[in-house]
Image (tube, rainbow, N blue to C red; front, side, top):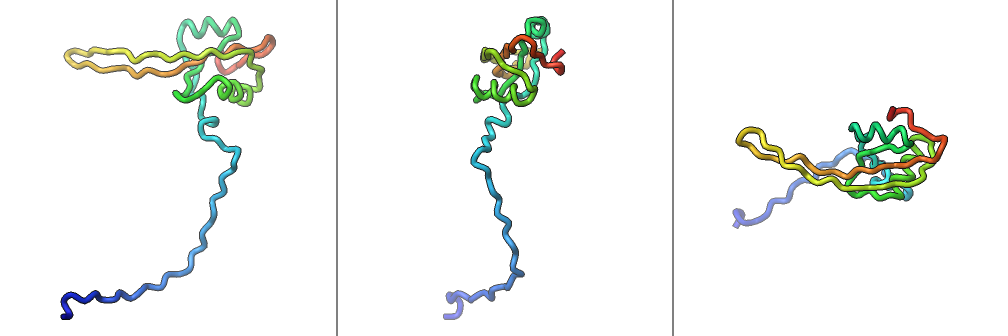
Length: 121
């Protein structure tokens, strides 16, 4: 019964490849690296810059301590306090089509006196 017997495949010999090991540092935290999405630009945010307060869009899973550390590291400033808020999604109608603008998380960062972020001005 040659029809039902399995044929043995000849194993192809491949050239030996060197596998490079990827080392992951234990201190690397992807959430920590991508907390800030960008500056939040609005009329009110521009007025807050005069009071040494800066508004950022942040990732949804960010928290105050992560944001504080990241701002201090990125801009070489001293953070006094952080306030966070979630904005709701908004309904937008264009003709007969309805849709939504997505909600996001934003944070107001208050800096110590004498510190400022020049990129936000």
